[in-house]
Length: 133
Length: 209
Image (cartoon, rainbow over the protein chains, first blue to last red):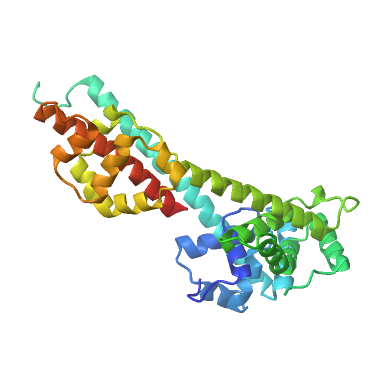
């Protein structure tokens, strides 16, 4: 975000980034997790940075291929950005979110497995080579 | 001053929202947000917090674009419908704020036993910035809120706000001067902890307000 005071549309866009109904929720993950600057996003979409607030407030594209294409084209045409680049960015953001949720579930599974190993070890007594051997 | 958008333009956007146009939510919000925020500001002329008016307007618009089928054009115009929804949000937010403020000053009694098993009064005093916080809260208490404090608590609060450190002085106002030194020390510590806990809680809630 810029350092100047946010106008109402920017503030509404910030609100949209917390609601998965909006495309802003997806694209905000690129800004948050990958540290991608808003200027970079605007550059990749071939649009001005100030147009991003309006983009953030569009509905997130549906997943089904045909509907996805239709939604991305509608958004790109309304915002005045490149549809192909927008589709790529959305896919990137969606993959990132999927990976993140997968890694979260993996790390919690690993923690559970580690806890199970620990409790098994306690029940089995000291490991080989321990003081009781 | 922002003009109310034309009914024709709004009807067209509503049709696009119903049809699932992915860009329509942005256009709808962009068109109506400045007008609706202004309406909410006017609705509450003495509204201190502009953020509440903005949130009320934004929530009404977001709700509308997410479920455009709920709006029935036979009942009201889109602008009237949004105005009503945003006013309802505003009333709820203000009610919530009022309840929150009332809770700050309720100063519910905290069990003395609970106070005794937590931080020392020295720790709490350091955490709070001791007498400045006590003094500030004392100044903020209105007549009614003052009445919620027991005479003993009020006297202890006043001593705290004066920066008093002597156990004897606290014991005197608490009416326990005749007890043993050990008992006085314990009871004074418990009373200070209990009161400081209330102050700390009400201070932090005020900060979040």
